[in-house]
Image (cartoon, rainbow, N blue to C red; front, side, top):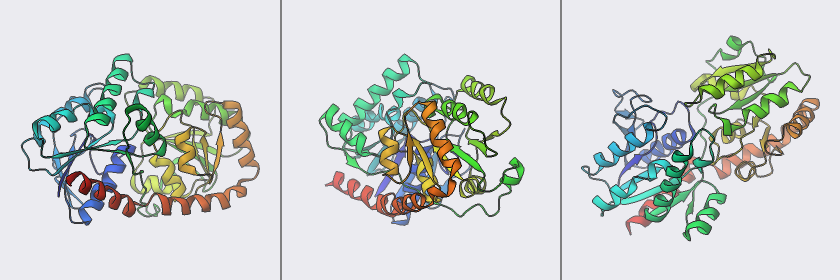
Length: 369
């Protein structure tokens, strides 16, 4: 099959759950003998890069602003794919799904798949108009796509209740590329192995990092808190976080990290904390579990589904409860090792990319029938 992916920024993934998802899925599909094409944005993937691990890359421009980057790129890609031989066009996320009607209308013999990653309209960086448009994209994707994929059981239930449609559950997965042996990031950041708490996410308000910083500042400990990630058109929020942390030298903003550096930060951390107020299915959380880290998460349904009882939770947005849970772990860090092993086993069995790829291929084949 010739399969085209639209909606992601590009691959190889530098950051972003959707990009990591698309990279892993497409490269595994290519290994299965499929012809796979991924549209990329020049502000994310070098336009000179035309192939990656068997996947063909098609660079198309975008208007790189907060509100027009994804829309403009998706529009150009949706028009471009009309002139290509495609068996399947696979749209990612509710924003890009707003334009899948173009392919449905003008390329009726091509099957259109939509993966619902997250209810992005809950993210506080978006204004009223953007949230309305994201809801519109959700409605178009759920109603018009030939097959709908949801990355969590919660989203499957939501789609059934809201649109009366049965979506296929296919989660995000995780694949680790080594353990960062070639990185000196710990030395560069003056970190000690196993003596820091790690958070990895985009620096956007709904990820709840402000709650984590406030809770950590309440703790008396020689541990560091390391926050890995970059702004996503959220410079004001980043400035707010840094001001909040300015009087505590233990808090380190490590910026965006990938490859060996990110692997090293994961593999040498003592605890991973996911304080997000809303999620789809966090790839960073799955990665932390795969590295064998104890995890502490906000008790939103998506986090609890991912952890599956193999970690700790705290009340969403509750700084006091998060402070208590952090202190409990710091008082006895070895207590998390058995749960961490269970979490690692859970990821290996439930979020395995080989199984995810097979499940996705079956959905493509079903849409062809």
